[in-house]
Length: 407
Image (cartoon, rainbow, N blue to C red; front, side, top):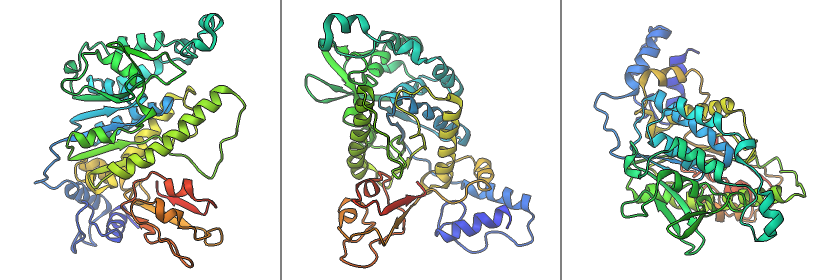
């Protein structure tokens, strides 16, 4: 089957034509050659009278060194010709988001990522530990990391950025989430605000801003969709780094760093579940790059992680109806030959032999993908187009009977 036929067959199977609109008859002639069909697809992919969203907000989630994959997502956005009007970031997502909002392209951002060295920027506070013991605030010094942020984010004010940018951090004194970048907010430099957003508790020393002490915004909201919602976004592109292969348990290690990081990760999954349930609506495209094999503070192969982010974004953005028609037509046509199936739904599967019909899946799913029935099939939506991709049903199934596909 040629590329044009695959495009038509796949689109019609999902009730859409190649340009993401309801399928209609007469989309091409059987006499067209392969090249003609690809060119025809390129012409159809973006309607001439397309109305673009008035405000597109890019939301970059936290995830430690996994956040380097945000560079690949931004590279895909550049390649697809998508317009981003505002940027929201948390933790490492704040670092990458601020660089992007400051006018750096993905290649410049990759240079910054390559400069971050665990050896240089994660130095133990050995002297203070020896002197003060557990009264000291962190395992690592934050100064070197803070200096790096000041080097690459020299803006003294958020107004100096090329795009509106917002990042969140948690106040240890008021217990409130601070959102830096909002009008009327604290007068703070971009580097100081980003450091506060990325200041993982017990790892880095808390950020001090106007006499208050701040830690990583991911402690309460790892993917700041609430901010995008408050900004009245017409389109939200969200990058969630919480994906995990739940069929592979994480081996336990009797060490303080492992217990801390694993606790942060599990807590983040639970917080993300509620966040996505509330704010992932019909204006939101959520993608989950497959970077769970990386530890929060493991130094990755930057080039490989960027590639993972770019490929995930290309597949998600060229097949989701909310963004497909906004993408560069030729790139869409090229990618149709590589993408096996659209990424705008999640496949729900339940092992009937393992299912005990407890109803947990039905109570957990925010989009009514499952039924609470005493016997028989519990899946109501085998292909769930409304799924928020929080993976809560699979994670909370007491017998491990649920598997989610096409994430």
